[in-house]
Length: 437
Ligand code: ASP
Ligand code: MG
Image (cartoon, rainbow, N blue to C red; front, side):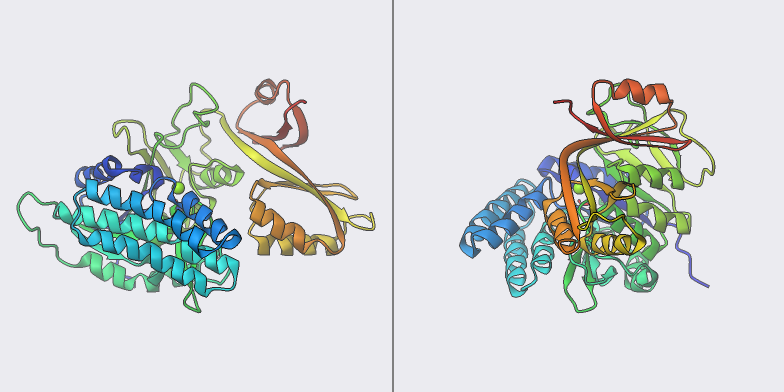
């Protein structure tokens, strides 16, 4: 029988929660006030660092190493600046330079552009975790920095690697041991809980290369780590008060849904609710580990608990609006009807291009797919279908999903827009919308 360690917890802080020195101070404050047992703390790249590293990556490919280094130096400086403001010991400066420069060196070793991307972009999570570790140590936390790649084993599909979930518990042994170790507070006033700071979003393939799990993948990492340490809970700290019934940037009068069944949360994230990464739910549901979504800004605001609430529907309609989605229509080049053999080619190409489908529909001669705009993935996908298929792309569309709402509601919400596709089932209505030109 496995040895249960019911006291451990996992806390995940996204990029917005570590955007600057004050934000890092706030994370430390939360760890002091809200974590009273050994915890794994997963922290994303700071602010928009992942986007900035993606820019370095594209400059590296289009212009070359010198230009890429110049762009990278801006990212290095902003990290060093934050570390200075936090008054972390001086070694951090060298550590941060080394994190970014060695990521660039490692990237250059790869011929394969996707492997290159992963090696470079992972630096964002290494840097943020080094800064948080340094700051917590300065505050006399009992803190340890962990390379999450030792726990998260993946396949070799760079940029959208699949995790070997079956190996997680076994790989987590060292982590569990470390969390169980005794803590020695350096003084009566220093925080005594043991904290392991580690990365989300990244893993390691069997050939030893760094991989990434797809953008916003660190929620999923937090769930996997919860499995690895048999955590009693996962807390994802957000800039919104839990799971709202709609995006507050788009809708007014939003409310927090305080209890959500795992399956409902899975459906919502699949349809595009950006509050949690779709893969996050399953590892938690399998182990019955509750997931809390709560605000790092207003600690007194409502919290969402995702757990087993079978059959329980949210008491309010849930709206998910996904902007900037693409519709790709396709069919056999000879204009014959879309047969199962064609579909098998299409799904194979989807799988290898890493596209996450949000909606699909077929007729005799046409197959329509809807997914988030991502020019790299789209290029890969269309390239794979070049032989044998015609394709047509329509961009800048919106996908609206309403769950547990009335038909009148969606009609009202989409008034004045052109409806390109629609799907209905008893719980859900979905419309793909274009602006009326
Ligand atoms: N830093 C990565 C991203 O921005 C992963 C994450 O934050 O979840 O996509
Ligand atoms: Mg993020």
